[in-house]
Amino acid sequence: MKLISLVEILAQANQGRYAVGGFNINNLEFLQGIIGAAEELNSPLILQTSEGAMKYIGIDYVIGMVDAAVKNSPIPVALHLDHGSSFAVVMKCIRMGYSSVMFDGSHFPFEENIRLTKQVIEAAHAVGVSVEAELGKLGGTEDDLSVDEKDATFTDPEQAVEFVERTGVDALAVAIGTAHGVYKGKPELDFERLKTIKDKTNIPIVLHGASGLSDDDLKKAISLGVNKVNVNTDFQQVFAAKIREIFRNDRELYDPRKYCGPGRTAIKEKVMEKIRVLGSANQA
Ligand code: G3H
Ligand code: ZN
Image (tube, protein in one colour):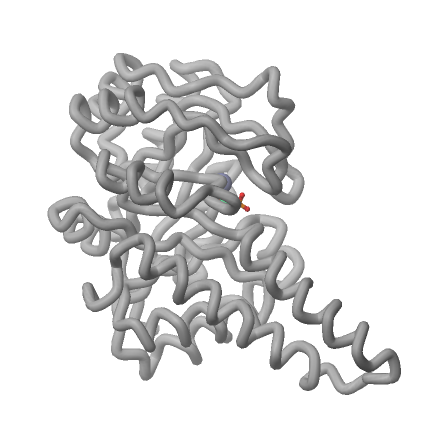
């Protein structure tokens, strides 16, 4: 399998001031729609699986599908674990062939987050696998991960500097007002905080919970130093909406190719839209 780590992909993005999509796959149609869009726009790509998606698809199937997708692909692709919750799950992914992992220790106290992240980085870097970590706590829900709005905490810039220095992490996910899942009101992002974190650390910054953000907010965040933009819900929504529409028009339909196929096309179109906003087209 021909996969590369985030280091190569994000170093280029950091230099060129654009962002690469960290796009979540939930099934075969997601994978095909996403990689099809990235290939058509000649964009680098970060395919990622949450632990929930890994359980749903089965890790062997993830590896098999991604292998089939990338082996003849002309674009650089990373396969990344999203929100890894333990050293054990990270090790499992690395052993299976993931080229990158996220260890999400954001729910632990600062020192514990550093200790656990360092442990992961030491093992991952020894075999050329990149590591994303998170500091600050995002609100919202993704799979089994749920954080009440009142428990969400923004990333402290001083802590970010210390975290990056002490861990040697490759990319840092920050909490600046985004949330996982569907937004209840209009998201208000703390751009000042983002700028300070980037200026002080100068490492690739990751924006989680990017579904539902306006193009202007995304572009501004990228101009201030975001280099990886995570999207899942937006693609789930267009897939579901297309299938609902098809069944509204034909209640007797039963061939999955006739609703999953158009669902896949809807994902591809949405991914192309995102890639254009992120600025990664023609950067492969
Ligand atoms: O880690 C994945 C993302 O942060 C996805 O968030 O579903 O709100 O787009 P989203
Ligand atoms: Zn996330």
